[in-house]
Image 1 (tube, rainbow, N blue to C red):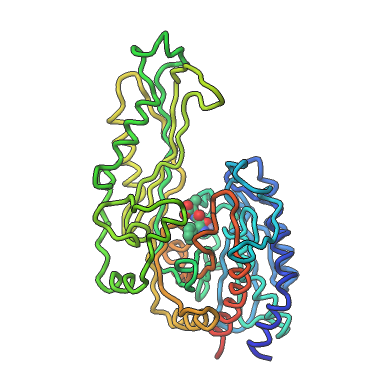
Image 2 (image 1 turned 90 degrees about the vertical axis):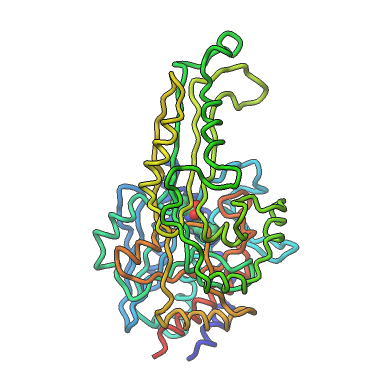
Length: 458
Ligand code: BES
Ligand code: ZN
């Protein structure tokens, strides 16, 4: 029995694997919204049952938030851990979806066959690529090639509040030779990739209160302070004209890209015009003196993710609101300290408040950036395996997104994380009409089979 048999088995089983993924996608496991708590539990139960069916001893493990799914299978070395997340982002704005986000289907589109539905790419489809590779391996060989631990999280999209305590408490159980994380993408939708840099993330919500109640803007407009205007001024002051973030000390710990990495990224020939064109844009709008790949992979940012205040319903209402709030996130790089930035940001906002206004802050996660070592020979082995599966050789890339657990594997457990995923830039993750290409799913499963083979061949 050889790798070729496992790959053929994957090809034959693709329709059944797709049906299994569709079943998981029907569970609306939105972690950030309490109304979906039972659904998060149901998604965890589904995975527990599926992994137990594969012979992996798996349990749903409680946390103060959503449960972790942890499974173990004994076998010869090396001991590999696989991480993915079963929670998904909220679906709003629902009216921009072409179908019910939790009634997924396979669709033929002009650019190929896709699996459409919330979580198809982030991260249920990706998570299932590894499980399906194991299923095919087991069907062909009767057992899996090495000792495996599965660690599936249900809070990744809501800042992973239970993750660090859980990892600390179960450090011995989760320490392995290598942690495989499937939650990233291909390079430029085409080239297989191992992601070696992730940005960190700091989430802040601010609520500004002025008058004690909503007021008539004719009776009070002019004399009363308007919290929406105060908020707008604060938000406008967060960047200077060169696109740099103005929070004091924000750039402490941000270094220039080393020459070798700059040269490597230049070799990737990133087509930023196309990247922007795909989303209806044409001009890079970040810091004026930075290259496009730097802007998304190695420079820190401050973005406003949402503003709430005043009357936003149909028609018009002449109100002077009592409160206004905003959700603001910072992507972090290098050794920027999320907690120091939180403090500096809160002080900056507080210092800008006019008389009669107060501010309340609430934090939504704070994770550092990660840069991951690739000296372990497993990296070159995995890179060769990926290059065998895809038309282009695999690249080492950065990623603008955040996957806090990658840093925790490195810092809390001393386990090297290896990030490999098959998402494409146009998957619309976190947006309406999210999809995962059938090619990503199929070749993703085949890629993991090749990687498992490469990492466990004596
Ligand atoms: N899978 C994404 C990370 C990602 C984004 C990878 C883009 C590749 C390209 C992950 O699930 C995610 O969205 N993470 C959140 C982090 C969080 C703490 C809410 C993010 O980056 O916003
Ligand atoms: Zn994800």
